[in-house]
Image (cartoon, rainbow, N blue to C red):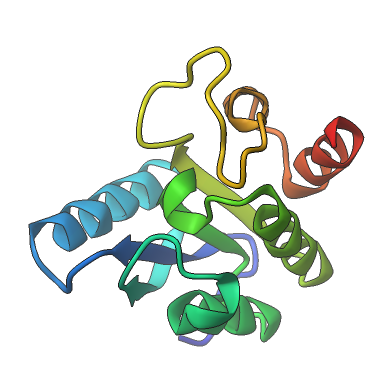
Length: 154
């Protein structure tokens, strides 16, 4: 999609499911569509990855495609339904945030995780950061602020 108005944010949605385009896929896609409409963003497309949730970043072609498309200026924002759909690793989250920063893109995550954050709950790889990430996202911080806070928390 070619840009016609640079003041309207353009978004790419990211959907991650275990098994194809069933009801879970459609529920995530619809949530992303509603969120973009509520934020007055134009959803230029959805990308998805299908398979186990523990696949490393390099084995998710949908996310790689989204990050590449953000680099071309096709969109300014990546929208994911849940943080654990984007990644379950702090190291991967840092890598994703770094890429977004380099491309001048932002990130919208509709929910922090699959369950309400609980004290002591761990976010992938045994790292106790999920509560902190949920707090940062809840305050609407941009990717630079989240990356900086994660860097200082590590």
